[in-house]
Image 1 (cartoon, helix red, strand yellow):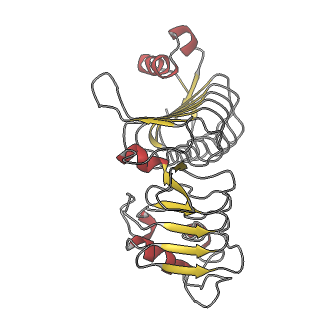
Image 2 (image 1 turned 60 degrees about the vertical axis):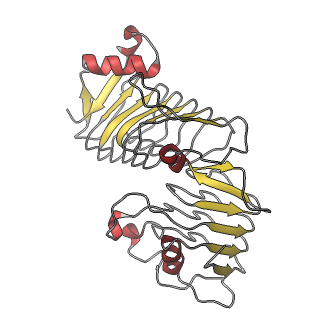
Length: 318
């Protein structure tokens, strides 16, 4: 741990190392002031911005004590709102000498998080790998592994797997299977590679948020905001989906084989949603006539027949 910034915490604080500063664009500082010293630190006066900028410079942050919810939100994202490219950055690592709260690593795209204690669920867009530091558990971004591979890392849970595809014309793409039973938010956030993620269980919030390429298959239920801000690729939910599915969707495909809740397609701008039953959607989204290419997509993605595919309703801007 070189060039280390250390916070000695006397209390559990949310949104440490949060690259969004708790979605600053929504509250303009009323909920979290990036330039305010982090509450509960002992003997130092580091601000929330200090933590983020230290990580962006490639240096490490150590938290002595428990971390609250949303630790390392959007870690590694060069956010457009703050003048960035929206792409991934190489960043330093975060070390927590204690426990971490819920939603650790939501929308995380690079870097590593080390935790000596427990991590509450739902977690974020992270998966646990064998640690290279004694006394810690280690977590990497799912999106980072899809983009760059596992390298020398191995998953701690033998139910999880990753196979690097060869990119041939037969569709042999990288494939990650998550079978550890961990409930996660933002699975596949900001994925920009033709890759595949299969979750053998349920997920929580915002699956596929800001994804541009790839396929995510949820073999269970999904929480709220599934496919929100989806910008390409395909998300398949083989169970039910919570409210606000496809909110602010821009492109890509969302397929829900089970029940869907209310407020679907709010502020939808593009892409297509396929469901098995009629649903109420928010204008200008409306029910559309599926094309032959739509039916072929459903047959291929769902591994079904054309008759079953014809049973789906299509919703979009049409």
